[in-house]
Image (cartoon, rainbow, N blue to C red; front, side, top):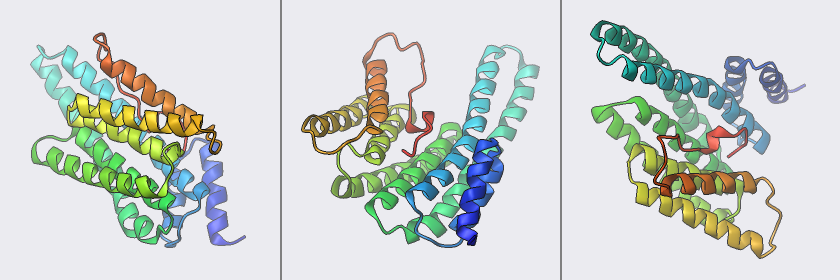
Length: 248
């Protein structure tokens, strides 16, 4: 068994065993082989990091929620803030790690429209995650980098991928979440989501191709549009493509 095939096999096993740190290590080793990843390989690469960062993002949100509840208790607030900063440092480490691998080993080798869009979208996602907890100049820098990556991906997707393509829809979904949650630009978020949904629906209704995987992304776009345009949002979190176990 060749090393590349072995790493894929081990990454799949690690995923089944829910050992996502191991999965990340296997896929980082594969990325360092400087190969143009297959759809399966990039999916494993994404899923490993997604689960690692997802658990830490969830932890950070819970801690922030508790911090708000004890705002009047200064001593407890200081203790929680110290712990929150520990989690933020872990988040920063994972984000910087995946961004480094993408920049050095993934994007330079990406030769297809799918792979280019996939990795620029992923770059935008992890800068967005950095922007979620950063403040001041660090937040602005992460936001700017995220937007540039998403915009680059959108340019390539517009010419290389069909409107109903799963990766293009996932990109539009996460870009709209970026506008809504990071930039606080609600109108722009709705515009991006609606345009992506409408264009995909037009293509699907025309009967060109089969896009069963795209329907999940379209439902997430629809859900967010309903959430964002409703007056009774209740602070519910927006849904990104990282909320589903899919390639997008």
